[in-house]
Length: 241
View 1 (cartoon, helix red, strand yellow):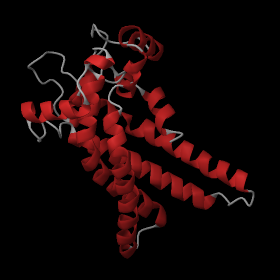
View 2 (tube, one colour):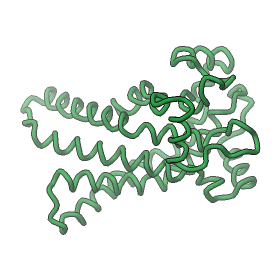
View 3 (cartoon, helix red, strand yellow):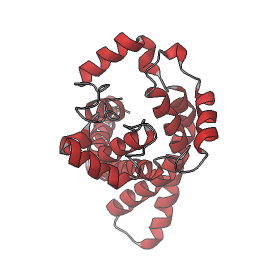
């Protein structure tokens, strides 16, 4: 929600993360925080399967290229992220559409009804169920590239601890730092994806159309920090995850 708003002139914009939470709770109730939850649940299992399976396959293929291990992990992560993005993007389109619906949770359509409506109105292409695919490719590709590249390189450097509790903390700490760094680096793609897939400022006019043009528009109209909107909740979600 915080990423989708369109600058200080947006009448429905949130002033801060705290204001975002308060406004959603006051206007839409507790269930308002769970809008669009079903598409991520549906996508989670195939997304994880694709991410880790393709990472291993790309890593094996890169073994024939005699790349340094650090670079091989990063490139394999990039490949797995790009593949993952193709799988999850339709779910993301439905999720963002549901989350930007300001009606109460009980008044909004179900995920399946919303998906059918998107297909009926705009089709399966880049204006419909695959809207914002380029930004999603950037988001997942960059995140996995940084995450896998950092995680496996640092994990191999830091010595394994014989104490299982300390070993868990070692792996968790490396994963937390990896997820945080990856989130910081890829969030401009996330903001662009949210703007493209979310409601346009003027009904009937497409302002946010392509990934890098959307980034340039956000930067020009709202400043550099606007490309990092939603960073705190993103780190809270993806860092520990």
